[in-house]
Length: 405
Image (cartoon, rainbow, N blue to C red; front, side):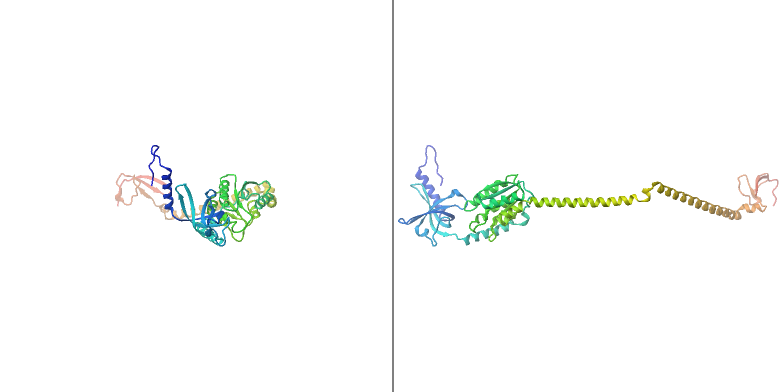
């Protein structure tokens, strides 16, 4: 399908238009969805021209040609209606004009829209975007509050006035955008991305003062919901519609029932905090005073103790105890020594009774040779051999003159 061209061999406009027509023809019939911006019916020609705008992008408006019978649905179409059309793109080669011709038009009712929102809710819930463990905690006292709201809206005033009343001097970063209509979802999403990118914004509030189910549909937009789920800044949803909660309420970190409720959730009450501080201070003072009283009583009891009243008396008592212990030890030691001495005398007497010394006391003597060995027989000595007689009171040296049997 490509054309080989060059500055020397340029293609003609007719050939280019022919190629474009061939490409568009291959697209065939397609179903598209959009919102009607205008209806221009030409009764004589039997044609109607519909201004169709994309649901997400403002710049993608197209003019659709339809028969007057198709445009005259029952109930009749009007500007602002959502429709689904079966269209066939047509490209006119001679004029180079693209035309979208509607073969079928179906109005999208509220029930269809709510059914789509419910299907999207189930899909996002299955992905875990509404899980509690993904929720972020709100800061105790934000430095700056990002506020996304309608221009000069009551919701804006409710949030700011109640927040300032609770904590004077609190600062806001305001984004006034469309909160209703086809451009609302994109506008709120863009404002959210801007505020989430600011490091000085600690919490972001998305608010509007309720509305019909149709008015709240932008707050169920998938791109907006995913942007909230991906935000690093805690998000508070304050749409103020209890009956039909938009998907923003499910994915936000905190859901406030009203703009006023949002202000109460994100900003502490200065009066309450001062009362709390005063109460804690009083409790601390009472606790410290009670502790000091107990310690003072304990010190008084210690001061009344005899050892502290007269330390010398305590030392004297200890010294006396040491003296008494030493006296008892000396008496005990003398008694044990006396018993041991008596036992030694007794054992000595018993030993002497069975010892050779007792025999010597009775007049006997022990004969020893020069090697101090006892002579037990006459054959153990020889004539002239020196011997020693051991008596009870000493020793006597002798010499053998003659050995007899």
